[in-house]
Length: 313
Ligand SMILES: [Zn+2]
Image 1: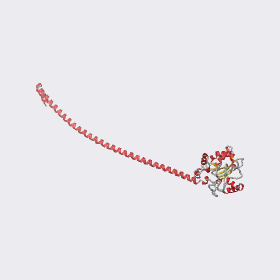
Image 2: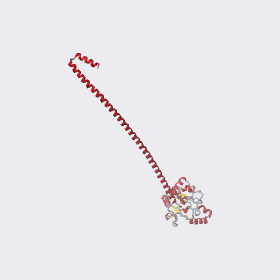
Image 3: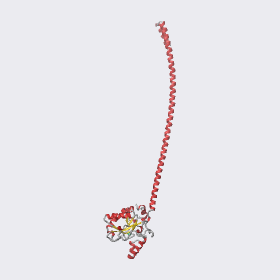
Image 4: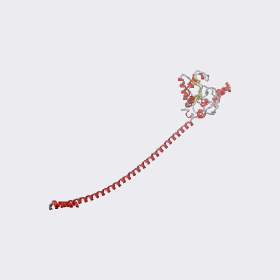
C-alpha cells in the first residue's frame, strides 16, 4: 500500500485533478480485475489439484486391481502348467506301463509259440542212443515216406525216411551229384524188429563180440528214428573203405550244410568208426558241431535239447 500511496502522491504532484480521478478509477478497476483473476486462479487451482488427487487415486486403485488380476492370471497359469505337467507325466507313465505290458505279452506269446512248437516236435529226434538211451520197441517215427528208388543203392529194396528229413537229404544228394559225387542210400529207417533180425544175423556171421562193435542192439539204433542213413558212393560196395572215397571227403566238408553229422567218428567210444552213417540233427546243431569240430555224442543231452525246437528250421 505504501507503493500505491507514493504513486498517488507522485501523481497528485504532476497530474491534473481530472487525470488523477481517471487514473484512480482505472487503478481501482485494474485492482478489482486482478483480485477476481487471482481468486478464480486460486479456485481453479484447488479444483485441478482435487481432480488430480482423485485421478491419481483412481489410477492407483486401477493399477492395484490390474496387478491383482495379473497375479491371479499368473497363478492360474502356473496351476494349469503344473496340472499339464502332472497329466503328461501320468500319460508317460501309462505309456511306459502299456509298452512294458505289450513286451510282456510278446514274450509270453513267443514262449507259448516255442512251447507249442516243442510239444509238436518228436523229442526222440535228438536223443543220444547207443548204450546211453533206450528207444521204446514200439517207437515208430510220426511220418515215414518211401525214398525215390533212383537214390537207392539197391532199387529193388525199398527204403523209408522221416518225411521232414527227406527234403534235407535230397538237397544233400543233389548238391553232391552237382560236384560229380554220386552218393547212394544203402540203409535208412530200420524198425525195432528189422534191427533185431539184422543184429542176430551179424551175430551168427561174425560172433557176438564183433557184431556188437558195428551193429547196434535193437532199441539203441539211430536208424529206428528214421532220420539216419548209411551212404555209399556209386560203383563201390557199401561199408567197404568208404572213408577212402570222394563221397566221405565231400560229406565231411559239406553234410553239415544240410543238417547231417557223422555219429561215430574215428576213435569214438560207442562203436567202430562208421564213415557211412550220417544222422540228421538240424542245420543249427550241425553247423555248431562243424565249427567246434566236436561230435554229437560229445555234447551233454541238455545242450543238445536246446536245438530240438529248431531242428526243422
Ligand atoms: Zn548206420
